[in-house]
Length: 126
Image 1 (cartoon, rainbow, N blue to C red):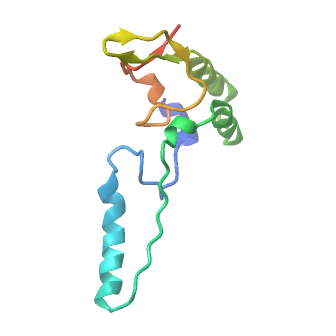
Image 2 (cartoon, one colour; image 1 turned 90 degrees about the vertical axis):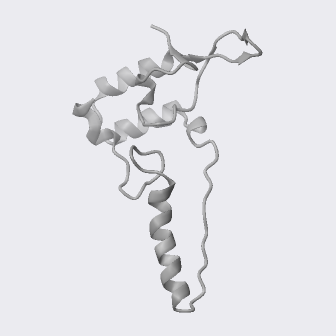
């Protein structure tokens, strides 16, 4: 994976969904800015964006095309496409397991390639 990190890097301005970063990393500079301007009796206006279920709505085809556009080697994109193409999930309700269904969009939270990590609610079928 180290070989392909350059194609998977996100903006240094992104705070969410990154290892060792969280809400506090984003709130600290905002709080300092608000404190500075309010200490000078200047009004402060804040606009926020809430990206609900962002990871659930990622279109796999768009994701792979973005990697190609970044210049990622086609063999690397092919491996990802192959793994995502075999991604299935299921639902357990009151101890009853529903039949598996294919996952056509969305990526697991925790990282761009989090599908390589084990998770009991997602399975990769070989």
